[in-house]
Image (cartoon, rainbow, N blue to C red; front, side):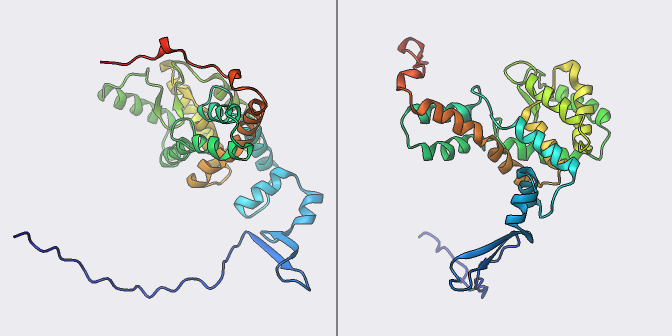
Length: 275
């Protein structure tokens, strides 16, 4: 006879739900004659109309997520990153998803949600950015050259070759070679006044690993900048999605007005069934 399964008695935790939604980000002041209509809005205490008149989009973007206005150096660093990430490019899986969605005549309003899901992945996406931020935060207190030396020894001990496309989140190779655009972006970011410890540490680590073909990936550059700007890893992955969204929408809309024949179709001879 099967032994009876014993279950613990279910008990209420007596934790009441909140009576109202609470946010420190946004305050709306209701109209005097209709409480359901906002007459004014404040972002972390700053009047939205005043921000429209006196501040840039980058300033308000930073304010929205960080709760304070950026310094001139922080705003310059953030703006450079936003420009660098504005389009993942047609080689990126997320952009290919946007193009396929567009040419497939899916409602244009669905281009971004579908493609952004791909841009949030662990391969060249927000998930990789978040992992890279955790990696950097864990190692920033170490000497980058000593870290590189130990890192190479560990790879050798595990019989991991340097031909792997990615040796650690945000750094490695892409398609068998150095990601030149990522390297160029990183070098330009390092020249800015707002470049901080994460960018500088990563640059020294990359220099120490350069002879093995290990370099920046775009996700690594984004991770280092987000850390230097004070963002947490969970936010960094999501912001990477957000900053790449304009390019996804642009590519999707470009194909939306074209026939499905505008995209290549893999011929039958290229499908191989392994036995």
